[in-house]
Amino acid sequence: MEFLWFIVIGLVAGWLAGQVMEIHGVGVIGVISDITVGVLGALLGAFLFRRLGVSAGSGLFASLIVATIGAIVLLFVVRQFKKV
Image 1: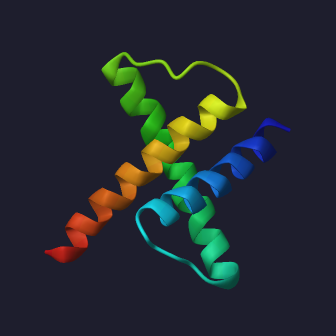
Image 2: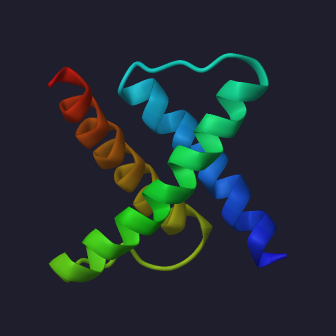
């Protein structure tokens, strides 16, 4: 069940990050990319928050915040490499 929540949080975080960074996926490919960005962003966000000594708290909402921030950072970095 935890894996399902991880995917759901990844989907929402990826979608939110896409909205903030103005990247919009379409159809099934958009959903898959949102999940991928959200899950990778969750891992990156957790790593960054731990390294900085910041705690977002616990629970579903805190996980969503960490995952969304991580996904935004991930999309920002990817954009920087794509410009080069």
